[in-house]
Image (cartoon, rainbow, N blue to C red):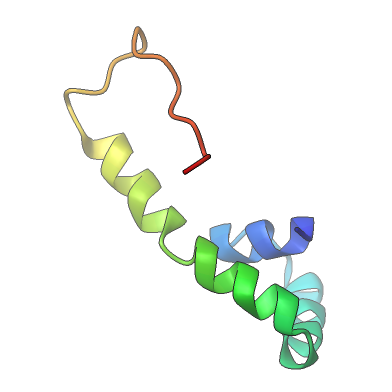
Length: 65
């Protein structure tokens, strides 16, 4: 996985990096597929932040399926 895919999904690329990654994305099927896999991550992270039942004592969630 390109680090840029995750950074793009999370919205942490600066303007130049964002534009460069979008140009790369146009021709890279692998990154397009990775982007589709990660597309729901920001929403899920927001849900976890707002979930009052989540506690610091809970073990971290695994990214594996």
